[in-house]
Length: 291
Length: 244
Image 1 (tube, rainbow over the protein chains, first blue to last red):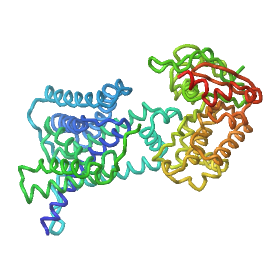
Image 2 (cartoon, chains in turn brown, cyan):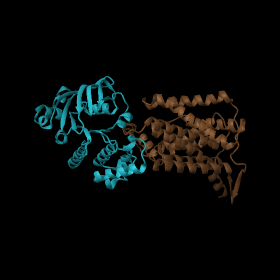
Image 3 (tube, chains in turn purple, orange):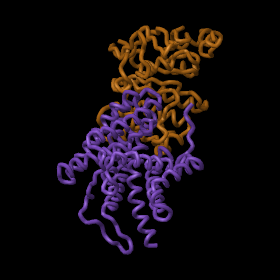
């Protein structure tokens, strides 16, 4: 029982990271109808910026964190202008290929600038964690869970209770109609990319002390987050969060009870099972393409 | 000066020319209807005015100023609201939210002020008042049409473009929609109305134009058009159908 609680805590912590990245996937998908395959690279780039600022330059952790977020906002904006915007009137396929290209470009840019050695980033707190009854609560996992709760609450408030949030929703539901009402569609999509890059960046910085900071971390996180969106039902915000948490718990239990080397494999096993037996995900509906 | 004037407007979709050099004008305070069969170029004309389709040649003058080539976001800010075919109510937003977003063209406004104006819309469209908090996709066709028109009026337009507001609605609801158009006109908003339901359209219009396969075939007062046999042909699709 103690072990189960401990695994549950760890699983939810890592799942929260997948959920944040998955949210970025879903928001961009809803705004542009395109899956952004560079979403994981946002996490990787943010983690490297964080390493440069806080480790190499030795700046205070929170200053580095804020500057990393600024950098990610910039990355999101440039990504929108350079990858999505020129192709916005094309079908989804050229755009998807462009995001894959951008993903390769980002990973190899970091490789060229920083070299292939994985880096280590310290956690935010000096205290490693606290013992709560039978469960040891690692401080970094606690931070991840807390930040995820705050971000999800913020996002809910923003989309449901602000006019700007409603304009973003309108843009994702019918761009042409939104533009007829005078909603600045390009600005709304820009905002979506910036916010998604920030979500990915926060996830990357939060998970960096748990993983190594490496060129490959983006692809790993993105595939897990992608699986999470499939589990939750593609395009569904609540589904992405629950799918991410579920995936984190499944792989943690899988590693503990079945096989540690196959830890990453469980995500794909679940992904494949869902694609075969419930392709619309937990919360999704089968939506026919518009005629 | 005409509120809106089309001068030899031509619009293409790729290789296909949907509108061939039509000229027409709408004076301030008028309700003008554009009649014609399917594919006559009515919707394309409205799409060109609101900036969704770019004119290939010719000009569009709004209060004497050319707006041809401007984007939809810029044109709605000038005071032209387009209620497109198929209503296009945002399915995942409530009726009230849909209507509130109609004010998006009017720059920065306090949310409270927009909400008050939306409440006024629910007085004008009392049928949808009970459904203010229902999501767009749950509304019936008639309710969606009322939301779409209310959303268009929230832009405080000087020119309202209505595309097929009666399409797919039960006769009773069609009556309601047209009584609302009459009310809009009483309030002084100029309306350019595209319809296939010629009888209803001519009953509220000051003047009408008849389009046939992208060309202007006829124009005149409702009674003149109504007496004309060609109109019956045109709006029933007689000639267009034969041409195909």
